[in-house]
Length: 254
Image (cartoon, rainbow, N blue to C red):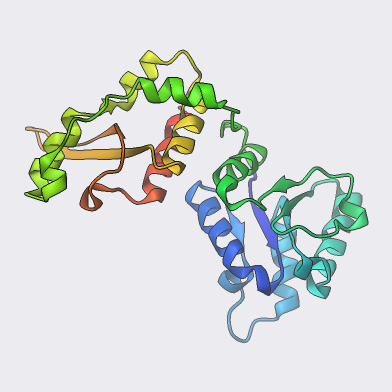
């Protein structure tokens, strides 16, 4: 399946587009970004046209800066011409900042990235569109969030965390006062995508964290056990956000 995507944007939106490209590549999507593809002495126009030709999808990052950009307009004209003549290109508007939608995109439903708190939801909408093996995000109500939260053990007062004795004390406490992710799934009558959507929301609200308990078995085989902990982990036990997100995306596709 061709999931290559060209990211058409204005330089003022570069920080957002870099994050977008990084997350797409982490998910296995080929994302074309000018600063990564165009080297010194390259023809900018040739490289852009090459990127457009080789990409199945064109993501148009919409913002006040981009809708007035001559480069973005040129890229859109090229891809729309190919879409009409070859019928093999798909345009995906991504609304980054509120702006007036160009007339020729107004009848195409955009993916809304304007709320930074809903970035992961919008990203999963995009991933599902590019590759249906990625589950589409699920809506979870406040009542359902509380139902899931109630299934996670309440840790008792932890002196090792409060007084910072040793890392092993903290690991022992967290591992004994958490719930294995697979056990939480077994206790929750939802599909996996909905469970992970809810966990993402609870993580965002700082109500739970995922502890990736790693170790080596007697035979030398490495293991990683994802545990759901109610509350905030000690800083030294926190896993990078992208590592947790990669785990969720991997499990959703199984």
